[in-house]
Structures are given as structure tokens and as C-alpha cells.
Image (cartoon, rainbow, N blue to C red):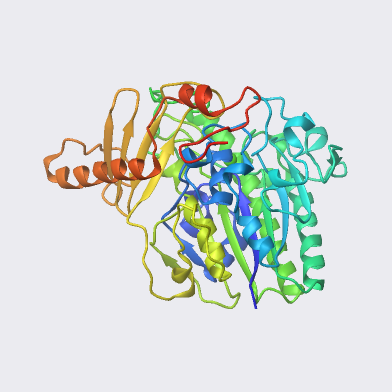
Length: 473
Ligand SMILES: [Ca+2]
């Protein structure tokens, strides 16, 4: 019997802000309980720690230069990906449903609430999801007019007044679980929440959760800096201070506490429906959040706060929890989920099937994760591009603009404050990782271009991806 899948994606939830990861400020009892019965990949990282790039890699198993989703607000080209994740599942008899933020279909920058950028028509742009598809492109106002979704028409559907979007999405998901439990085919339900992504405002969080943090104090991490990172983009270099960050964190942690309650509802739903035993539950996030570390806010950077994500896999439900240090990055997720279902990954997938590490059998694992930045968060700006290699202990990175290289020993220096490039005792590690980066770029035909190169050569005026390092249409 093929397992069902419930894949839950938070947005911008960093690993270190989860209770089970040791954050005393987190109120995540349901996620922590899930972790206690799941396999936790403590070395899970986002290959390109940004919203759309993550989703493109998740559904294709490919790196950003191969999907072409080099900044946000582009349109992924289905011609480049004949066998996306949901197609592989659908073809094997799975019912594939989607609820939440999609972010892979835009015709222009901004103007998110115009259906031409938020409605994905049924068909190939849904990347194989042919079941219930309650989606929107991009918005993070979780109450009111802006918190809408589409089904199979451009009509905007809103949750009833006063319903918090993640709560409404959870109800939709529970309805899908009920319907799937009554059916005979296996199902895969992907639920992509918008929280705890900003705006971090009191009005964007239900009162009962905000109240939990209203008077909370947050420590400023030792790697906080007032100095802006010269490689940062408009999104990372926003005006901040320890007081502002503490205020933002109140909303972030409150949103996460709400998310946690919704995860609890879903897990209880699986139990009540009697399908927990045969359902693989994944809880993860697309990327993390810097919160002032290294002088940066937001994401799109190789540092742990942005790149290291929660990745919990529970199957079967009665299993005992454990952690694994196996390096898992976004490109590995598709082959791994398919591996759990006994379905071979398509040949063009670039990640590795790590399902053996979930099943507890022997198998190979990646030597390192390869990370890429191909531009600013959502705009065509040059000067922010970098590549990085992260293994279980070290992070190596190189910026394109001036060729600056960095090396961090995260074991000795978890806050990544001491650049070891040039330290003779780390010379061999440095050389090895620099070579790994070069080899991977060669393999991916990643030429480490400036961001505007992709704009000029890969993307149409209405933001459709016409070619990538690996595809052409
Ligand atoms: Ca995101």
C-alpha cells in the first residue's frame, strides 16, 4: 500500500525558532510532539533561501539555475519540467491537493492581488496537482480583503470575517483529509501557510496569540550588527534596531504559536480519521529569517538563520523520534518523498533520494549542500550574488561582486562570526570546499552570472522563464 503524504510548509520559520530545536521563547508544543515521534533532519537547508526559488526546487528537484526561478515573481515554465513532483504522484494513482501560497506564477512584479498574478489556471502550470487547488500567488495579510484564494476560476474567495487565514486554510485541509480518507486512492496534500512571514504587526495576528508575547523580551543575539551587510539587498538592509526586532519577534513568535495549534489540529485530524498510520507527515519551512544577525534582515543568504530550516518526517505515526545529521537540501525532497512511495525520481531531478535514512536502512548521503543566490529577493539588482557549500561542519561562500570568499567552522563558531579564510590551519578545508563549489557549478552549468544577465537572457517581458542553465523552450 502506498503511503499518503501531508506536507506542511511554514513560511520564513527558521529551525532555531522551533521549541524542539531548543528555543525557550517558542510555544510550539504540537510541533515539538511531532518531533518527538519523527525523524528530524537537523542539517536541512534551503538551497536558495527565498520563497519562490524554494517552491520551484521543491516541485522539480532542481537547483535554482536549473529552474530559472532566480528571483521572486517569475512564472515557472512547465515545459522545462515534464515530470514535476505532483505529476509523478498523480501518474501513480495519487490524488494531489494543494492549499495555500503558490508563488510560481506571476506576469509582473508586484500587483499581487490582481488575479493575473494570483490565479493559476487549471492545467500544466499547476505542475501535476490535478485535485483540489485552493491557492493564491503572494500576499501576507492574513485577515480581511487581501486574504483570499482561488479555486478553478479567477474569482476571489475569502474566508469569513474574522477568520485568520491559517485557521481557514487548516479547515480546508481537514476537509480534504476527510474526503481523502473516504476515498480509496492514496493522497498527497500540500499545505503552504503564509505565516510567520511578515508584516509582523499586531493587527496581523489573532489577539490570543499576540497576548502570549505582548510583554515578552527577546535577547539580541551576539551576531547582531547595526552595520548593514554591503552585499545585502533592499529587503535585507531595512532599518532595524534591537527594539524594533524585539517588536517584530513578538508577532513572529505569536504567528508561529498559531501555526503550531493548526499543526496540532491536522495531526489530530489524521488520528480521528484513522489514517495516521499510513500517512507520511512532513513539517518544514521554505527558509528562515535573519532578524538582525550579521547586520541583515530577512533571507536570501547562506548564514544559518536564513538557510537552516526545520525538516520533520513522521512515518509511521507510532515511530520513535530521532535526529539525523544527514545533509538534506531542497533538491533532495522530491526524490526522497517519491522514494518513500517507491516511485523512481525523474532523470532530470538533481537531488538525492534520502528515503533510506527515514526508513532506517543503509544508503549514501550528500557530502555537502550547494546553495545559490542569483539576485535580490524580487527585483533585478546586481551585486548580491553568491554561491556556497555547506557540509556538516563548515560553510564556504563566495560573493560574485568582488570575489570575496568566507569560511566558517560552525562547530566552533555557531554564530559564524570568525571568517577562517586565510587561516593556515583551515587551508585544506578551504581548498576542498572551494573545489566542491566549482565542481558543482560545472555540473549544473551554473556560470555564476550577475542577476541582470538572467533578466536579459532567460526571462520574457511578462516574466515567464524561457530558458535556464539546463533547459530552453
Ligand atoms: Ca518565504
